[in-house]
Each structure stands twice: as C-alpha cells, then as structure tokens.
Length: 143
Image 1: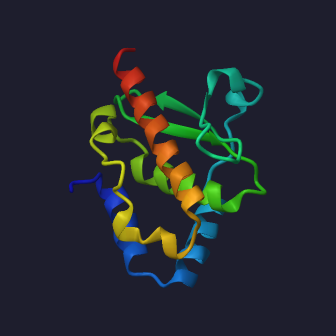
Image 2: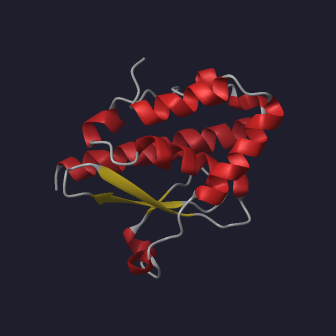
C-alpha cells in the first residue's frame, strides 16, 4: 500500500505505540487541529457534513494554487477524539493532490491498531471523514 509520505509516517508512528500512547497522541493531534479560518466562520452551508460521525463534523476542501488541497474542519472542542482523528487526516493529506487522496485505501489505518484506543463507532466516523475528503477531492478535479 502506497500512502502519501506524511500519512505513512503517522501510520507507522501509531503502529509502534502502546494504547496509552495512542490516546495521548490523539489528544495532541486534537489540540493541533487549526481553528476554522475567519472566512469560513458562519459559512457552514459551504461545508460538507459528515453524517457518519455522531459528533457534528463539517469539512471544507480548499484548492491551493499548486492544485493540492487543504482541509478545514469544524468540530466541537469538547470532542477531542474526533478532532484528533480529523487532524490525523488533515495533517497526513495536507497539500496532497486530489489524485493522491483518491488512492488512499479506506482501511489504510489498519496497521495503526486504533481499536486498542477508540471504539468501533469512532473508527467508522474516521472512515466516513476520509470518504468525504475523497468526495471533496473528486469535486475539486472538476473545478
């Protein structure tokens, strides 16, 4: 499986962690998730909802001048696990071209053994976020 290098690095890091380290790292990623840009605040209708998540999650893909994508997320601060999972995807795929994002397999995270640290429901939401990021990548190819 070939992943974008930043995402592969995250997968490799998690694969070697204990359960406690995974939880701590998820919290750290949660805290690293950038706030919603000012120009997107109050513009939720422009953002794509992720109904697979029990927590309200909205994302927006911004096309960079070089054709890569930057993802912005609106996730409540009181949902650190969900924010951490979204931040993993945002960090791992930031700046990637849509074609690269579309090649990420839906089960890319299996080596991370996230089930040691989070519920299956959260993993389903994580997969949902990736699916919506891929949808946004597909849409950006047409713009």
